[in-house]
Image 1: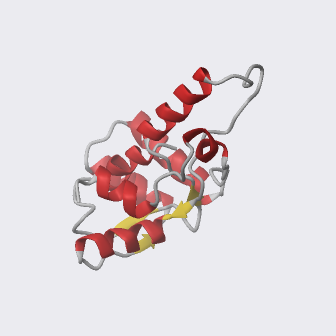
Image 2: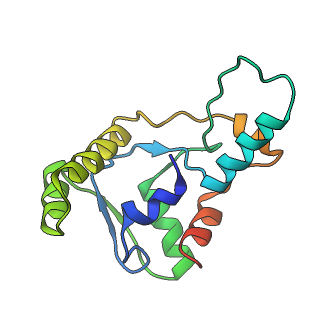
Length: 146
């Protein structure tokens, strides 16, 4: 999953408010789009990758609790993560005016995260980049201009 999606998932006030999502303790190996693009370009420019399949993910998976703690450290604000019910989340999205299909997509993605469907760590992208993928501190600084 693109780390870049966190700006939408966490919302406009992510730097000043708690994170309330139905993600449970699920983790995601976030990676920046630019990292995925660079890794893919390197793959295409190198020999020996023909007829191979790769998992292009961040090197380590992180949960929303870790994301909240990291945002708190970066901003100096107290930001906590609360695992809310899926129904409360859907109701909130409906209140802010999201169409039904967008609500379905957001809720299903967070359900999959909660059910640990995204916990697919791989060192492939790290190898293709020749360096570790961005840490939560690094990608949050970049995404939220900190």
